[in-house]
Length: 182
Image 1 (cartoon, one colour):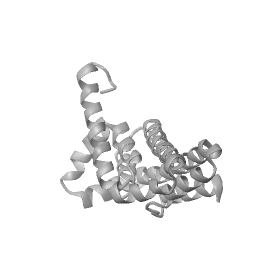
Image 2 (image 1 turned 45 degrees about the vertical axis):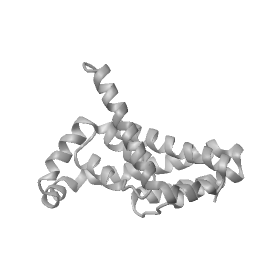
Image 3 (image 1 turned 90 degrees about the horizontal axis):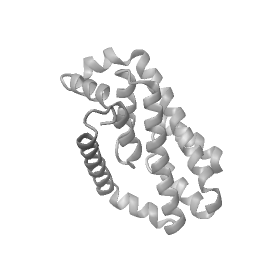
């Protein structure tokens, strides 16, 4: 499959289908087998995910708000306010986290609540890029054991990552109160 296969799988995974752990397994496996090609695998996976996510984002932006409000109830307004205030974090964090964390609902929310496309793309690009890069590095260093570890400790890893991001966000808010970064 190589990089082209990774692009297709991540595109479909981010757009229509769900392949929990498949993308992760492919990146880990290919990177462990061909360490010199790791940057290529990470780039193709990241670009595929960005492409699929942008397509889903655009579709959600075109017609999702009325449907979302009708079916989401009171939580819809809170979700809308959060996405409008923290558009980058609203997609960066889910893009960074491994399965079983749900990702597409955040892509849909970003589209429905009209987050800026540039902010959305950067959030997905950095989130997925960091995630796939880390998986590839671990794949090179530890091989298939990386996937076994991720599957066994995915929820704990996700909670730890969210906690670290919350701490960074609090620190940023404290030090950059007057800035738009916080």
